[in-house]
Length: 157
Image 1 (tube, rainbow, N blue to C red):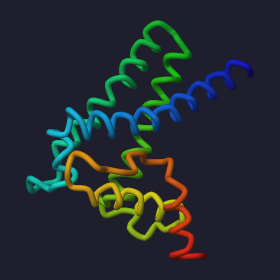
Image 2 (image 1 turned 90 degrees about the vertical axis):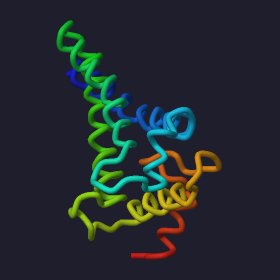
Image 3 (image 1 turned 30 degrees about the vertical axis):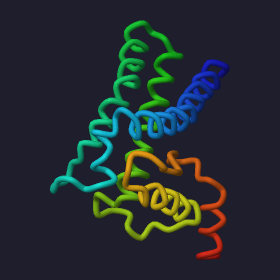
C-alpha cells in the first residue's frame, strides 16, 4: 500500500511540476530563442492543419519517453511514475489546449464551465500579443484569479 501511495504521489508531483515547466518553457523558450517555431501559433503563417509550433509537442515528449523507457528498463518505479506524470500532462495539455481552447478538432465545442471560460480568456489575452515580447498568461492549467473571477461574473450559473 505504501508503494502504491508513493507511486501516486510521484506521478502527481511530476504532473503538477509540468505546469511550471510549461510556463517557463513558454515564456523563455517559445517566446525566446524558440520563437521561430512558436511564431506561427500567434501569427498564422501557413495554411493547413499543422503548425511549426506543433514541434514543441514532440520536443516536450522526449523527457517523458526517456523516463518511461529507462524506468521500464531498470525497473525504477520512481522514474516510471515521473514518465507517467509527464505523459499525463502532455495528454491533458493536448486535450485542453488543442481541443478545448483552440478547437482544432470538432469535439467538445459546447463544453462550458467557469474554469474553462477562465482558461479560454487567459489564453485569448495571451494571443492578443502577436509579437515575441510583452506577452502575458503563459500557463495553461493554473489560471490567474482575475480571469476566473471575470468568467464567473460573465456567466454566473
